[in-house]
Structure formats: C-alpha cells, structure tokens
Amino acid sequence: MVTVPFQPGRFRSLLVHSGFLLTLLLIAAGGPAAAQASPSQAATDTSADSGAAVSMINGKATRIRDWPWQVALSFGGPGYGAPTRKRTFCGGSLVASDLVITAAHCVAGLGRPLLRRIEVIGGRTWLDSGTGGSSYVSKRILPYSRNGVPRFEESSRNPWWDVALLKLKRDIPGQPIKLAGAGEISSFAAGMPVKTTGWGVTTPFGQTSSNVLRLITQVVLPDAVCRRDNGRFYSPLTMICLGGPAGSTSTCFGDSGGPMVARVSSGWRLVGLTSFGDAYCDPALPSVDTRVSGRAVRAWVRRVSLRESGVNPVGFGGIPRLRPSWCRVPGLTGQTVAQSRGRLDRAGCILGTVRRERFRFGQPGRINSSSLPQGWLAPIGQRIDVWVNR
Image (cartoon, rainbow, N blue to C red; front, side):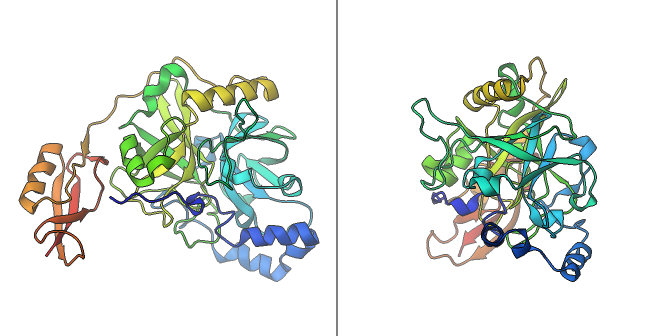
C-alpha cells in the first residue's frame, strides 16, 4: 500500500469541514447578530431533520445515561439563534465535573474571543432537546515540552499529542470517566473491542452534527496497519490504531475529541480520543485516536487534573475482558486466487467475491487489492473480497 502523507483535513472536527469557520469569523467581526438565523430559517433548521438517521458511519442511536461522561463542544453566546446541532463541532469527556478532555485540534487554533464562546454541554442525548446542563470555558490547557515548545502544532502539520483539557466555569451534569491506568493497558491492546460515541456526521459531505448521540464498535488494530497508511506521522507513543471489525464502522467529522472506551471489571476506561482518519471516512481504512491512556499522555492529564480540579483521573485495578479470536488478514497482493484462498483459510477468513479488472499495474491473474488491508483484525469467518488483474 502506498503511504498517504498526513493531511490536516483528515482530522475529525467539523470546524474546518462545513463552512462553519467562516460563520465564526463573521461572529468575531460583527457580533452575534451577524450570524443569527432568521426565525423562519431557524424553525426550518430544527424541523428539517430529527437526526435519527445520521451520525457515525453505520452507528446506532444510544443514550447519554449509558455514556454519562460524553459532552458536546458547541459555539454559543447571547443572540445565537442556530440549533445546538448546527453549532456543535467536536466531542469530549468529563474527567472531573469541571474539566473536559478533548482533541487539541478542536481548540488549539481558536483565539480568546472564540474560546470564550465554546459551550460545553453534558447530560444530553439529543443536542436540540435543551436537557442536561452546560458551561462556558474558563481556560484551555495544551501540552508543552519541558523547553516550552507546544507539543501539538496545526501549522506544522504535527498530529502528535492531539489532546487538550478545558477548565469549565462551573460543574456540568455527567459522570467523569477514569483513564486506563498503568496496570490496565491490556484493555486496549491490539485485538480488544472498544466503543466510540459522538454526534458526528454520517458522510464526509455532511454539514451538520447528528441530533442524537450515536455509538459504534471498533477493534484496536496493530500499529503496523496505521503505520503503513500514515508513515512517520503515526506514533504509537501518542496514537492508537482503530477499525471496525468487519470494515463497516468508522468515526467521521464532528466526532473529534470524543471518547473511545474499553470495558474492565470495574467499569469503563477512557483509552482514546477521536483524532483523524481517511478524508472520506471510509470504514475499510483505519482511523487514529489519541492514546490518552498511554504513559506519556496519561501522566500529563493526571498532572493537570490534580492541579486544576484536585481529581486523580487515572483508574487502577480493573481486569480487562478476554481478547476475542480474530482473523488477521494476510497479505494478498501479488498472490493468485488459489494462494489467497489458502492464506485466508489458514488465518480464519474466507475468500469472498473475486472481481477481475484491468489495472495499470500488476501481473495478470494476480490480486491487486482486497476489501480489508493486510493486518486487519476481522471476525472469524469474515469474507474478504479481492480484485484480480486480468
């Protein structure tokens, strides 16, 4: 597979993908009235779509009471007439009742006037429902190196350390979640199933967050899968590789900063934050989360949380569930159909549809590509389609 250079446009935030940034600039220049929708337009926006059919790729609707740490990041302020789902651009998680963890790319580029307009909403399943509660942000905390250099810089196309903490002006409804501790790291080892929630769109061309909170199941993939896709821009120190088990689920724009959690004996643990992935939210390609429960990021979050809220956000003592058995998709490129069938059988998968097409490169009769890439962890018995050069 050809290495794809990292592109900032692959971040899973709605901020730079929906024309929303232009709206925010208008707000900064002309005040809230400059971007306020007319009453008739606002009514149309609210009733046009309930949101029940949209959000994460092939996700399903869920309830905030099942994931009470989940929050939404929206832009608000007096006179702002748009529905909440049209103002929501990222997700986050409570690590204390007044402290939220999210992705750095959601907030790092915002000046103070816009930062003050971020409204963090908790305790709400439907964004437009008005339930739960909210607070504005009093402080943004980003990670820096010991010599004062920002660890995350959008301008330099540096995707590492994509994490930020937001101190709130007051407590909001919800139940803070603990990060997986040093003794619980096997909860997010390759092959472990995880859950991701958010209000993101269902297609890369979507302009508005979902109204209802949605959920997908993913599996932690070997680092090599994301390294092959992103080259040197993938760092296992601060990143974790993910994919839908059957290549059918994925996060998308608007899900950035939202929680990826794993189950242990004492409950759920936060192990990742939605960060970036394929620009078209293709579920058959891996996506990348910030590894917040990795040693480096976890230590920073703990230090800041103790200082800002007096809370230790790191869990301990939880016993992870048993890791399921998977079919690890073997390398099929360049193989004959018969060779691929044997390789798949030995791995626990099944050869699916064989499509013969004429490709510019590749030897006739040899496989050019497959429906899931090499190293993907698929359910036992998963059918893998292949394309053969004719």
